[in-house]
Image (cartoon, rainbow, N blue to C red; front, side):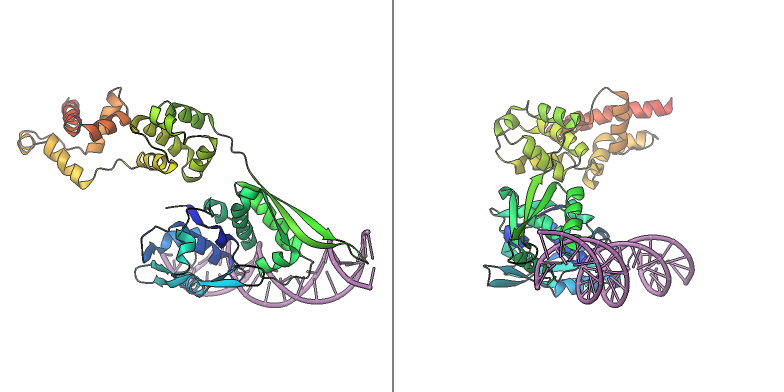
Length: 370
DNA sequence: TGACTTGCTGTAATCGGAGA
DNA sequence: TCTCCGATTACAGCAAGTCA
């Protein structure tokens, strides 16, 4: 499932004070599954239910949560006085029978999550998945939107307005700031530090007037395997010319792919890319392609039966039939060739590929009869 | 004097084990 | 896979003490 959330920065400044923790997680989970050019989205409820930590709870409770989220609006301040209120969903419902969720976003809300060419922020859902405080989620997203500035400052008034609380000044540190900073620093790719600003008083102690949050990104230490695969990938002239592969983009790729998948994907890109390109998006597409499972599709099964065992041959022999996958496994075990080699051959020359498998099949059958 | 800290308590949400 | 229910946790409010 997709795990990257993208939306306009505006959304990071919105008031989510009336959202519960699970409603927030559900909301951002739905955003991560967004695709362009779709009117109504349908999702399997199970995965989403598990993601928001309701694995062991009833679908009735899940439905209550869905209904509650459906009623929510968000408020975005356009200046210190005025704000716009957006209806998030025009449809959000759980279909009990099919156990699916149907989603249609509000027309005015859609640009906030689809127009993400500029002034947008993106982050991996995994960072907020295990957060236990809704404030951690809100401040993490806010920090992502403000990251390019390196810091952001909120007056005490704005701070409380953002959280939708009317706290007396006590408890802010203990109940909001400390737990939130700890969660963000331990669970996410960011480090957040807070410092207070004070205003002088005629009498008594100085008064807290605001909070400044310093944002820095944690340095990811790249493993030797990643370093080697990046070095190898750059030996491909087209990847090298594109200049899209650097420390920063590798970090971004690691947000989307596991280390192993990225290593395999870069190796695949090194072998496969044979034309000029200029975007990271293209490289990601190629890396994703490397992960497509080698499944024996129905069509391929028909091919393999047709090409490897003709009806005549089937009649002539009593040998057992093997799937393409089984023949491949046998070949890789007995010949000094890689899976990549066969995948490439299959793409570029199907006739040669199936002929090769045919030869291997005969070897298999011969070894079975011995 | 009044803002801030600390500690206690109540309420609602969430968790997790047992059993159907 | 689902429900039930007691235990735990997060959030919120209050009051007394501390500090400049």
